[in-house]
Length: 211
Image 1 (cartoon, rainbow, N blue to C red):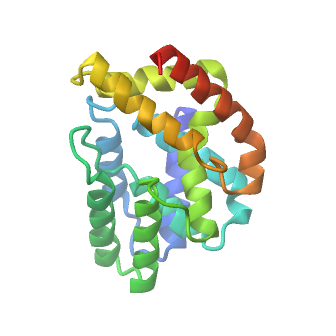
Image 2: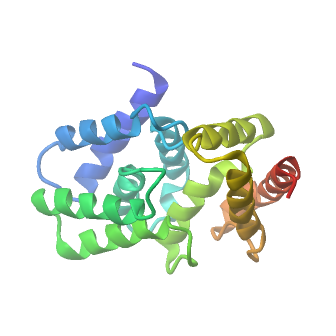
């Protein structure tokens, strides 16, 4: 078993039981992994999922309701269509359906839904758990240079159908949006680890884009 497979299997068992869902949920886990491994995904893949879950495990003690964050991470990119604008909403709907079927309480389902929708990155997180999950999702921005460059290449591959100039303009707008924030990361420990390198990476990417 590879390290990634071990991370994923341990995480699923811990999160599924932690949220008090019935059964093992293995069929749901396998369906999610199949989605993350779709050929159209270069970045939003099981590699990204495993990286998020690895950070979650490191910072798990900071969570208020850790099992909800863990399950939200599993579902946050469950639906990913590069031509759509409602992937988070569809991912949240899939989550609600599966958790309800597994007997998870309504309040927990609502919180997991809100965690997933927070990964739209359109507004500031509203609580500690949302802040953690969003910071995990954005950790790649503060990755070492080689890893960040790989991420940028993977994103461009996912949007290969977009003309170069349109991609340049759209991508630059997204990166400038992150730089315009008072801080990219909300959780103090994650801000301390990633903020400076994220700023460097984003400015370097903008220069490469000619923006």
